[in-house]
Structure formats: structure tokens, C-alpha cells
Length: 63
Image 1 (tube, rainbow, N blue to C red):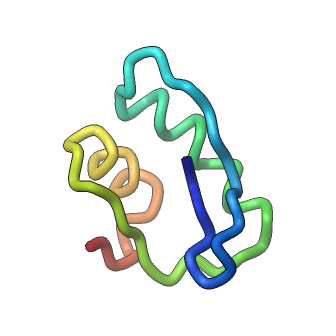
Image 2 (cartoon, rainbow, N blue to C red):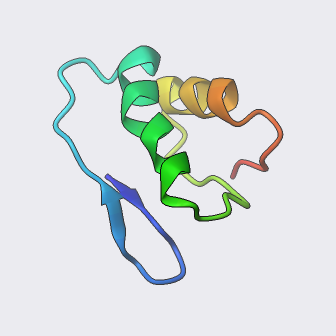
Image 3 (cartoon, helix red, strand yellow):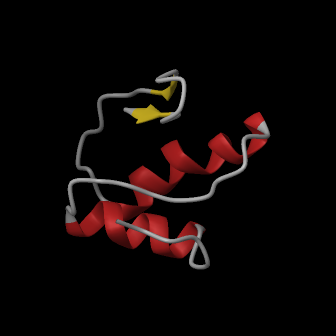
């Protein structure tokens, strides 16, 4: 699930078969088209999530 943090709106949700970085990138990439400024990234720290985020948005702070 991808959520916009200030409003709590769900931007994307999908059951992923493997949770691989490539599968996650396919879920995350369209988020840019919503026009929200991406000013920070937050996750539970799963390696594949961190990898996908760093490949898509390497210049955005991650926590």
C-alpha cells in the first residue's frame, strides 16, 4: 500500500506475488504521475522496498 502521508489518502495498493524490487518499482513508478511532490520516503525497512525506492528516487530522503 502506498499512502500520501499528510492526508492519509491511499495512492496505490496491490497484492504482490514476490515483493521483489522490480515488482515494487512497477507499483511505485506511476505515483509520480499524480503530481504530488515526493519529499520523503518511509517504509518498514524491507530490503526490496529500500532497493526499489533508491532506484526510483535516489535523491529523496528515506527513513
